Each structure stands twice: as structure tokens, then as C-alpha cells.
Length: 174
Image (cartoon, rainbow, N blue to C red):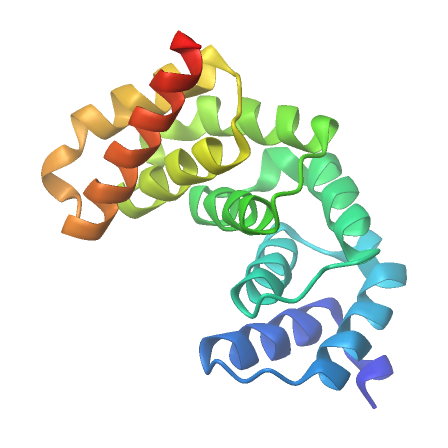
């Protein structure tokens, strides 16, 4: 039955299980098995939702990671801020660095940073620190955006962002 799901159906199913914190490995393995060959049909919301869901449930993405990264690069101009922060968070949670993907996401974040809300800025900052991203333009864009919107940050988002800045600043010193 899951083989008949559309890309959106796969994304919605995995998102629902992750949101409810239901770990169903056979289901997620089936989603992954169907998603890999369908990845070329994925839209940015599908890519982001599936990546976020698997990372949220601490599921190793296996071959799905390459399919998601490749499709993200191909559709990066269509990503909205929430989708960019979601997929960046997922890759950082998995501690996966795919350079073409990372370069494409970094460029998109820099271009769209003025449209990011405080939570998305915090998520990007945390992801950059977790992956030890060495991209001064991205770091500057995220830092300036955080400074402009600092009054909108929740205590947790502010703490995550300050931690990320400290980690990335220390990286520059070393």
C-alpha cells in the first residue's frame, strides 16, 4: 500500500509519525524505500518534511540522504525559509555534510535570510555550528539577522543561537 503513496503522502505520513514521536521502523524503512526512486518528484516541502521526520526520530537516512540532497540542490531556489531551516537541521542532526548540498543551501539562506523568523534563524545557526560550517558569508548573514530580530527569539532559540555563535567564533580562533 505505501508503494502507492505520492511524494506528499510519504512526507505527510513520516511527518505525522515524527510529530507524534511514534517510531515505526518497518514503516519508515518502507517510506525510505519508496521515497528514493520517487525523489525526483519531490517538492521542497516534501524534502524538508521527510528529512525533518527521519532526523526527529533519529532514523539513519541510508540511501535516502543522497536522494534528498540531490533533489534539494535541484530545487533550492523554490525552498522557503522554514523548509531551508528544516532540511539544514535534519542534516546537522545526522551530522551529514554533502558539499554541493551545503553550498546550495548556504547560498539560498544568504539570499532569503531577511524572510527568516527567529526560530528559523536559530535553527540555521545551530545547524552551522553542529556541522562546523566554515562559510563567513553565511555566518555573517545569520549573525546580522539574529541581531535584527533578537527581540523575537524565545529563550531556547536565543540560547541555541548564542551557543552556535560561540562555537563558530571559537572555530575561527583556532
